[in-house]
Amino acid sequence: MLARFGRSSLLLALALGACACGGRPQPSPAPALAEQAADVVADKRALEPALAAGNDAVRAAGDCEALAPLVATARQRFDEVAPMLRTEAARATLVHLRRQVERVAETCP
Image 1: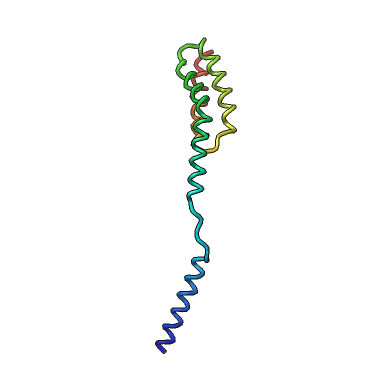
Image 2: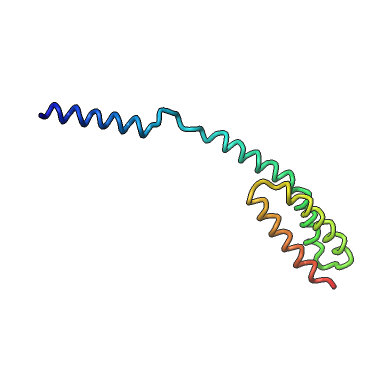
């Protein structure tokens, strides 16, 4: 009786082990990490001109004459770069900078 119980439990353990493994190795997360890193690098490059234009507009906050063309340039750069962004962090950065530029633009009539 004990030998029977031992064999049954051994067969059950082997069956469960085979089902749990699925017989296939799990995919490596390395390609996903490489793709994410490529997205971050691409977003950094795409954001550079928009960030520069936005920062120029924010720096000119006290000078309304200089501010108008800088705000127009910043808005244009923001619109150009927005569809190129791949990551949520880059989109959030652009939204935040756009809000800052709009606040600065409201200070001048």
